Image (cartoon, rainbow, N blue to C red; front, side, top):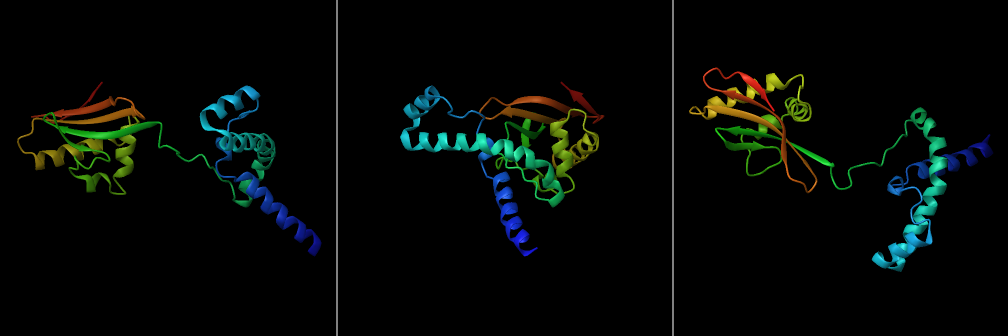
Length: 194
């Protein structure tokens, strides 16, 4: 029994290291597998990096089939890992903007427009704000919208319009309004705007 354990423990450790190799899952299949690909890479990055990347491509071609076969047993031992973290941030950046009478007063993650940031970053409100930005017909959007309108009317008593915008942008791209809600005086009823 001791011999089995002495063999099984290192094999299990090797399997977990093999599965959880950080960054290996980002190496594409067939990475630098042809001389033409290696020559193009060498021209751009030089020799030491080309050799390292070619070795990573070979290791990924060996690792991937083994990792695929070992993947079903990971949940049993509660060791399932995903290294697909944001490397450069999310591909689509989504922000909530609040405009009062055509003046921007709040934008997510913007230090210049921080009106009521503490409310929107509150752990109970933040999920509602995030779902409102992501989904055009989010379940809590009207409740959040009524809260925003009530706060805006209290802080800006002369306001005539409050607009809640969901602004999306690809990384490095131009932001655009994906969907919005508007409330106007005197009724202050929230209306979806395209």
